[in-house]
Image (tube, rainbow, N blue to C red; front, top):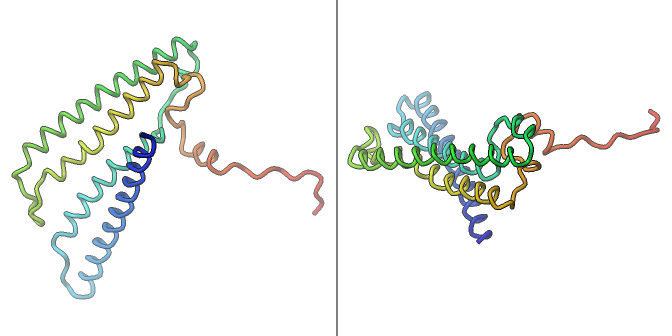
Length: 186
């Protein structure tokens, strides 16, 4: 099962890279066509906007799995283990509720806008609102699994990192300082 999940997230990362590359080609190509030939690709702005939305939502799913979202857990770290566990479970319960509302709203908007077409491309507006489902469903499952692991004791809330305090700390953790050289003469 772990292989399937890892493959799913690998595919997500590939899709994110392809969406970013397509956005660059569309926007840069449109700029070159406008300046050099005084004409452009009519649908490039609309497609790049849809690609950006999908890129953002899929990137949020990847960050959710890697616990890469920024947050503050200073209160949880100061609580006793039982209180910390209850606080984490309460927070995850609230996240599950918010994600369920996101899924519900995205589903409703996707169904409502299925017959509506985007003005430049003619694609269904369901592609626009479907990104919320592509974020909500995997995120709900990730949060649910984390809550299950906390509730059953598979994750120790006193040592686990569910959020990142700052981007600077993440950069420092990823690239530790080289060991200091002692006694060296210059």
